[in-house]
Image 1: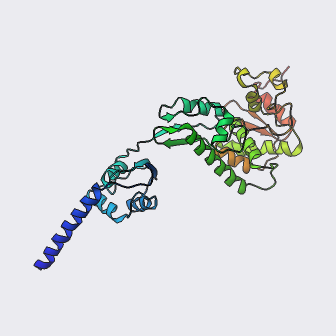
Image 2 (image 1 turned 180 degrees about the horizontal axis):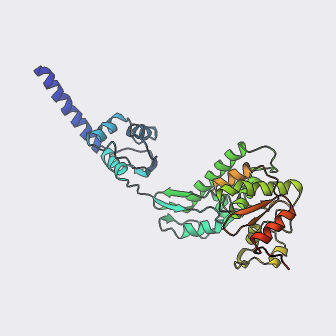
Image 3 (image 1 turned 90 degrees about the vertical axis):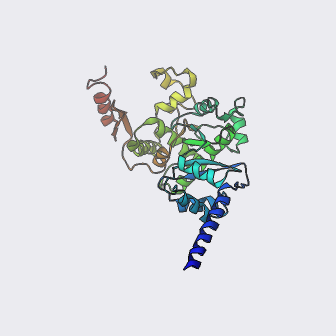
Length: 331
């Protein structure tokens, strides 16, 4: 009996000595730091194995034992963490259970232009500014993009990064993310769409993004524009005209603006504009790839952010009278 007790004591002491050694031995990474994402609802065992998979730990059992010994195994906080080379397992445990991510972030909003993206990066103090004096074309070359114009090529999202990360690296992440999103959506798109390339679908998605803020309406908006393309009707969408006006647009779209020809005036030109007009989100991309099956060729704003859809010009004119002219015929 005494032998068993002594064995238990020795084993416990050996475990304590090992865990102490393990807890204070710095982690050796292959790089200066790595990003580590803990999703909401993750279990500690799965996180430990994930750390091994990313080469932050050599084995997971000791880390899990350390957490359970200190009563922290159930204290995980979701987030994206920066694990720096030389961090000890004890410091790492405190980091992921306290929620200290140590990361900065920048948010690109759905519907933003590339100019607005650049402004957000330029105003972010945590970013290392390397592209402020560069042209759009230079930036595209440096991130490995094949396109010559940047509009719509970057996915709107919040990007977390280590402080002093270059704006070029962040832009490359956003560009790569958009490429992955659009290519995946293209591979799964509905049949019979009038796009020749994923880029054309991206153009459509950007128009859908700017036409409505209601997620439920995006497939219908896309369906209307698809119908117009199929019958050879001009898109006649105000957001493209506004984009084409650039700095000349003062907030009011006038009849003369609709008659003034630019490369983006879809009232004066057939088909899609030459480039996207903004960054579309995933909802708009999905709508462009899976438009609603509808006979509608027209839509008009109701004044509450939603739209009335019509299949004929007569129905559309009646909707305009009802929702835009207060029920009165225009003179």
